[in-house]
Structure formats: C-alpha cells, structure tokens
Amino acid sequence: MARIEEIFNENPGPIQGFNAVVQYDVYDQMPSTYQHYFHDGTLTIKEGVQVAPNVTMSLNYDTFKKFVLCKMSGTMALLTGKVKVKGDVSTGLKIESILKKYNLKEPL
Image (cartoon, rainbow, N blue to C red; front, side, top):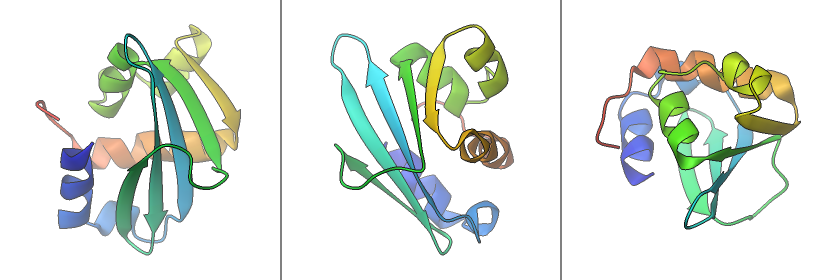
C-alpha cells in the first residue's frame, strides 16, 4: 500500500480535484481494511476504519491486485461477484479511470 501512495503522490495530476474516502475490505488468509483518502491532489492510505467512506469495496487480495494493476475491470469484477460494493458506485468507477492513468506495475 505504501508504494501505491508514493506513486500517486509523485504524480498528483490524475487525482487532482478528486476528494473521497475509498475503503477496501480485503479478505484472504489475513483480512485487512484499508482506507484511501483522496484530498486536494494527495493520497493517504491508512489501515483500519477511521471515517465513514464514500464507497466500500469488499474483495479478495488477488482481485484487489488485478483491479489496481488494471488487469480486471471493476465492472467485470462487480458483475461476476468478485467485488461487492457499498455506497457510491460512481466513486468506485472513478477509481478505475484514475488507476488506468497511473498504469501501475508490480511489485506494489
């Protein structure tokens, strides 16, 4: 997660003007919750629940990784039941368009 935060903050253009809290409930062998705070062109990632998010996405780690690396579309993940979304779905879709602009690569 720290690498994602670093990459986004080195190039804030794609997140400029995007203000939201996106929560990822990642489940697998070691379940974790992460909140991504987008505010004024910066991204801060914190583990655990700090505030009420705009959108929450529940997914396993493999799906999370594929989503972040743009190897799986959010729409396809939603339609196939690989991700469950609570809250503002449009915010979740906006994240996908932002991720495409960063073109993240492994390792994260």
